[in-house]
Length: 205
Image 1 (cartoon, helix red, strand yellow):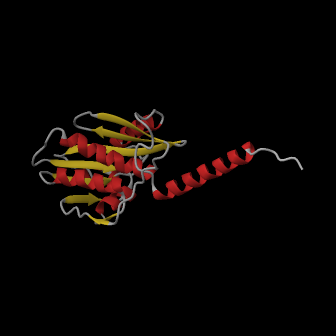
Image 2 (image 1 turned 90 degrees about the horizontal axis):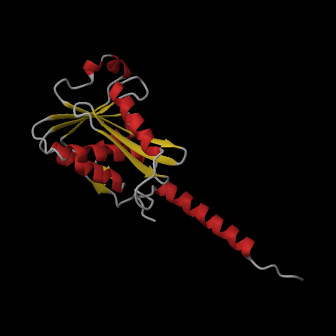
Image 3 (image 1 turned 90 degrees about the vertical axis):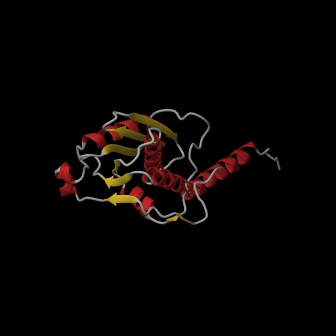
């Protein structure tokens, strides 16, 4: 089973700006949203055992949903949403623009900010965002979730839509987190043991 892990890798992101405003700042969106930038919102969700990611472009009116299946964690869904957003923006090959990507996951922002990477998905995400930042000013901004910020609410809706959908292709869609991989293997082994026990022939004394 594909694992979402790599040997500890140094991958700095010197050109990425990361902002974590206070909730008070978000009461006045002028303090947190770039007035002359291209604004995007991303979110990850998990309903039951299925995860999804959503991407919303405020200026472009882009709306994307991704079904990530039952193996992905909420953290992975948040990172995948940032990755998918970066890839979508790169399609238009922007140059010398200010691009702001808003997410309600501080954990995702801290993972992107860290130079040391242990997750394959985080590494891929950082590479895409670094590519985008090589020719543009890219700002990753934390937004409080479920607080009535319209773009975040739309990204949340799209992520939830993805989490109730069916993924295209075999699972796992993303590499399995180490902790989930261990628990999944234990569960499979327990099921195999139980099946073998039930199917074992009865020996009469």
